[in-house]
Length: 443
Ligand code: SF4
Ligand code: SF4
Image (cartoon, rainbow, N blue to C red; front, side, top):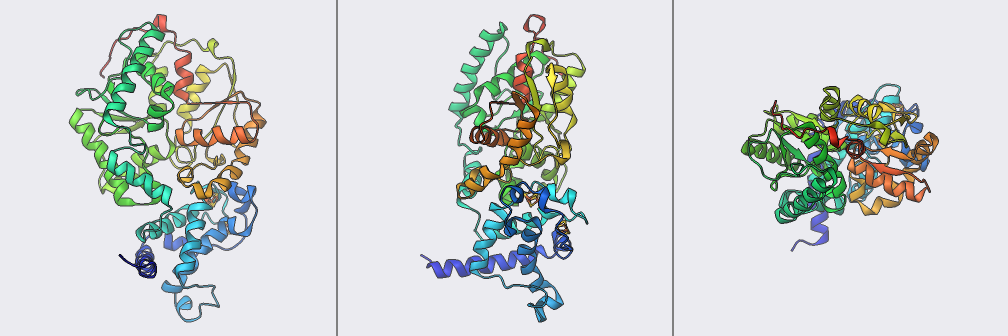
């Protein structure tokens, strides 16, 4: 077995090789561009909730760029002190782990407000890639990636567990709606849609899956879950483990092919949407053969086509909307959820700021899987908690299961009396089941 010293030396040599490889990527250009104007500080929920210099976006950039400068610039090589260039050693690696995994969710809000449009998140992701290649990903995140690769989903849900859950949800759904045909199909070849969920829906939040099944049925959609690939999340994305991320994407496409599906619909998930829709082609080196759509886009289209009969008067609660960073700022999906909510909520109010300028809830970047940064994560959620409080809403529509976990925790910690709900759950509640035809359309 290798000694600790040998393991550290190996990690350092892998990190240096990975750092050199980053010099050819786009993030390297941004690393030398910061003009230290300091405008980014107030954009960052982590800095605002804990205003220490290490949390300034510009400091995080510098923490990465100083190592790059030492190896890849003339002055960095010959006069390092003059330009603040540093050698990367074991101690520096340790502190870099905290900077890029524990002080940044990669939300990208600081870049919107940066005086020169510096892509801070690309620099953070470059450093995460370096650390992951050196085997230094924080334990919880690394374990989650491994579980996803080994079992096909991040919570190790077995095929039997999925089938059993689908069976009892089907019974509940048929009983509640009065429609015998309303159910959760599993492994059904020939379905038009392969639907991916966050495994937390199967394990802990089955009402969310029940609501989606009801909505699919009311819309007359032909769909199925798969026991081989049910997971909308991709923790390879958070770890910046590109080969794991690519493998998880490839498996979904292969399963869609095997089942004969012509579309993959993604449950409400920010990073899952960004991964499948926008990052996937880069990981795979080709465009996917079939489209990936968010269930939000599907719901918007079904309501526009009058495929789901609704009675919005059933929902009188003041409802606001959280904009998940990976879905909205990075994913470009801001209007479908608003179109849906305006139709199904009698009283819908916006948060301020919103859409691409919204604040991160603090749960992004894989933070929820890294216990060691839990205290900072919850503290950073105070900005989101205040945004919610200011709306006076009783319901927060949250189109991301990852953000929902964070919102559940921060609203409890910050004493907010609100319900956190997926958009599909709110829609399910207002379906007028007497007018549902239950006819499967395959267009
Ligand atoms: S990407 Fe988000 S979390 Fe990271 S420094 Fe910028 S604002 Fe802060
Ligand atoms: S706003 Fe941009 S240029 Fe200014 S300090 Fe922040 S990262 Fe650097």
